[in-house]
Length: 325
Image (cartoon, rainbow, N blue to C red; front, side, top):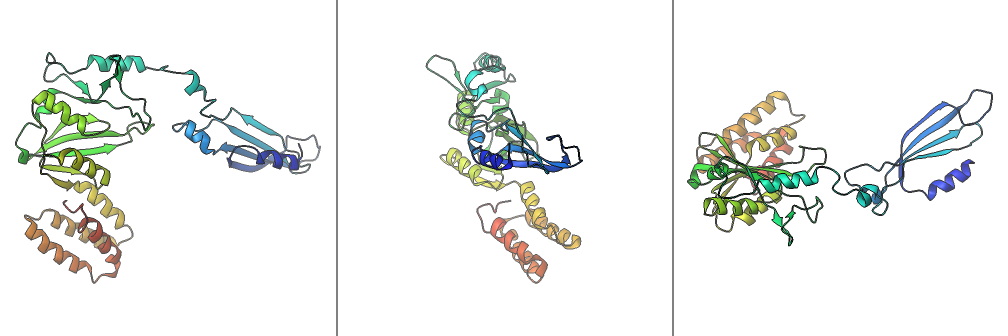
């Protein structure tokens, strides 16, 4: 088609981006003289297609070949757009993988008085009116959620509150779909970690199963996690009802952020700042910490290279709600 017709047609097509554009020898026309054509590869960037397949890219691709001599433009389309109406996977394919097998395994791993202390079991899911498992479908409204633990792991929390710290961490890097995966565990004074549960949604189910198995509520005195408002609010909502706890910051998380902010600072100065922070971290009491903090901040003040970092450290790790590290 002529270039004018091509431009008119492209206006009515879905939103796209050009991912490749280069000149190559022409194969569009039959002119004898050597000349080039422009090869363009188009990729769908429609928000509608993104909503239809949030975990996969739209398979539609377009190829445009423009003869530089005659301005002739053939267009080739590969595959079709995915929409909520025409999406083949959503409309035709249901439970076409190992869904039923997973349900059977979860149903076999239910908690009962007959299971041993070390045998794992699932928790956190419900049954519908037909007594079938209701695990959710992975959407925002009905997230897929299931937890794994054992009686022996839960017994790790049945101890003196002052003798352990409740750890909570989350990651979305265990698989290509980035499902949230939350790990909850305990550590004692010997710095030994005791896994409590692997769970994907909230703390409430952990407390419920703990009460069923152990016979009393799970109480905590120390909780350590990242500097995430969502995590802190979740802990407050679940444990704040009957636990007088202290929310501790993960020191590794603190130092990771500190090293990010110290990029560009000379190496010898960076090492001195890190040494000062470790000095604060190992303070023997709150009173000693306050005294050392004043000394360290005054030490950093005259150096212009630490002006921005000093302000960041004071706002984020000293005066904010995440100052217990």
